[in-house]
Length: 402
Image 1 (tube, rainbow, N blue to C red):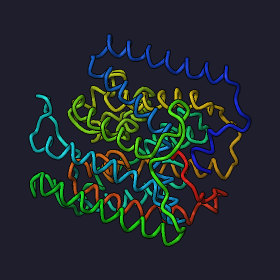
Image 2: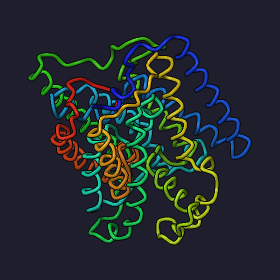
Image 3: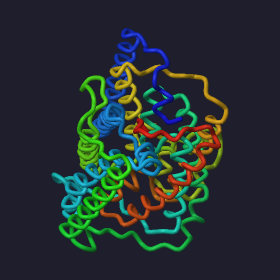
Image 4: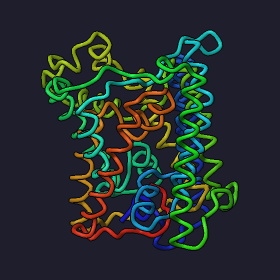
């Protein structure tokens, strides 16, 4: 069972009910944007709206990382991965010269560059297993929840639990062998780094296209899909839009798009408000984290963007006439969500990020750790595929939303 299956309608919902879903989502977006604008800052309001657009794009383009990896590894279909290569190529082209300059239109910017560590290998592997067990990645879990995926609510809940446990163990994992952060932009210069990355993307494109053609006789297009209003949008359109929105995030936030840091914060705030002394844990001990524990989540960049993603997906599901939550979850699917969510949250904290913060934003920042992350994560996805039948989860032969 994938995330898209959990919010596909069993019976076609009525037009009026879907219109109300869309209207409610738009009303919530407008109300929250106004609240953030007046209680926080215009920049945070803009980041919330950026997240909303991301949710709309992710849903309407059915731009899922988990499904893309699954159909590639299981059946040699490469459209999802080729769309990711377009996204990465455009993002690197925009990011590399900007990061080398250190500012964008006068706004100081930094990339997502993290250590090349043992914990990245283990954490990304765990994250990959969790993707196939839980039914989604970090961004996929959020937009599946927004789109009405009931099973994905369970995945998200245990994603948060796993993140908190990962933060509790964070110091031990950081004590393992590691190289310092390595930026290809700084080490090679942005021009050479860009040429190297684009060359690798092109090579991967050729290889996966050849595999797909040999197995299926044709290579699926990433250009043709459905309607503008109801979707699905072309995969290439989703790829371009996400690259541009990440670049907008770089300008507004001063750093690229991330997702999972908010989950650790949400879990920490819950425990803190229940009386647990999480403020004494090392990951929560910095002045910024101490402030975040006591302040509203609407003051946190990653949190407002995550909320925006869910609401954007809710609006898109209404427009697509597909918002129809199915509340009955088979026990084995429920167990897969619990285990998958724990692996996703714990793995992301060990690996310095997820499919967005480590893979998309990491590689777009020229971070070597992003390449180590995706290599380890793909191995984890393959292992996760082998586990799916034990939880009565099918291995689809076509792309789905997550």
